[in-house]
Image (cartoon, rainbow, N blue to C red):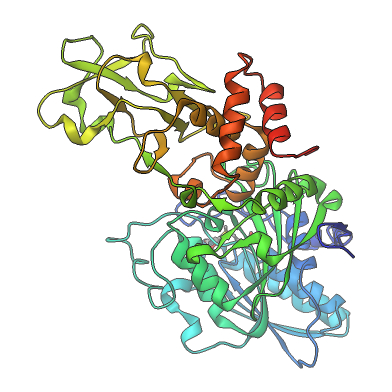
Length: 505
Ligand SMILES: C[S@@+](CC[C@H](N)C(=O)[O-])C[C@H]1O[C@@H](n2cnc3c(N)ncnc32)[C@H](O)[C@@H]1O
């Protein structure tokens, strides 16, 4: 099979009905404990990612944050199906209110094994998984299948602060601590399947965690749910979730990426196998995991990654607007003054232009009083990128062109929800700004960016790592763009793609 081609997925959904033998009826899911229970279809799908374990008498499963035990049940039954008849599970669960349901389910699993000629045993530990740090005395688990709690904690006051500092730097989110301790508990060749937010795959916060994880585990498969809100129906939190399978060994040369809209259409999931170098961006130890949602997005990723240099190597810089409004209230005014300049906010940035009249109810001015220097920027050509898009917005990247002739003053105010791009050590030409804005406003770049980040936020760190065409190509796109007054998506895409010799996306 060729890399980049779709492969068939082996989905184990036939045993979903049999899960009805078990009890999953806890209604009150506690937000504080990060309780969101996995649906049976998803649990079975996760278990179907486990491969057979050879030459082992007793398979040991670790469930960290077990809830009612649905993931252990699916994983143990998968073992049985794969011919591993003796299984022992260790289940950590902090919530005492759920322990009796968990115990009942485990007892039923014991019976299931007996009736299939196998033997299942278990141990429930009503302990805090992170503070117990089982990896310090036991590293003999073959399988771990987890849906850990997700919440950020205070890096100074939380009990979790520093609890995994020996494994990785930073305290990004409790789920990362769970994944780190679990991976440390596994035997060499052990498997971890986790359903977690996508957030760890990019961004500076998780850099230390990614480095730790990727130096210990090989990513084998990532499944992405394209719909942000349908996986955990009662969760009320909108974020992209992924299921990932890791194996404790050196990173293998290929990684499979699959996607489905939600848990209802898992059977139709599209699976594509990629070379690991295309998926893991190891530059500067960022180790970003890029997730193309479809074979077509994989094609775009491949095209763009062939471009000659990264954003920063092209001599561009990107900075975040220096005006943080809540810290500079005394400088901001809704009425024009002699000593004030326009302050550009998110609503002022449109594709290819800046719309600021001073008449829109959100338009404000920045007063040039003492101390303004550290909040203001020189009045010169910039490409301005919005830092946030709403979940309903079609595009992540929206780039406006800031033309200094539009405003007479020698300075301009740029609010913190904007990123501005210029050329290091020189002024950017307007034509180059047109080229760069066209590139950022193109469908090609937007889809490339989506493979890199699942976030609605556009961080300067990620932009710095983007691949770009040569500056000459960008300038020639700019010339074409300036020659047309039509900024429709189809025109932009046509100009960008033809300058870069790209036929179809
Ligand atoms: C997202 S739920 C998943 C439950 C179950 N594994 C499932 O998939 O349905 C996470 C579980 O972890 C438990 N939990 C939260 N913090 C914990 C900790 N520090 N140690 C052990 N369990 C914890 C919660 O009570 C909750 O039952």
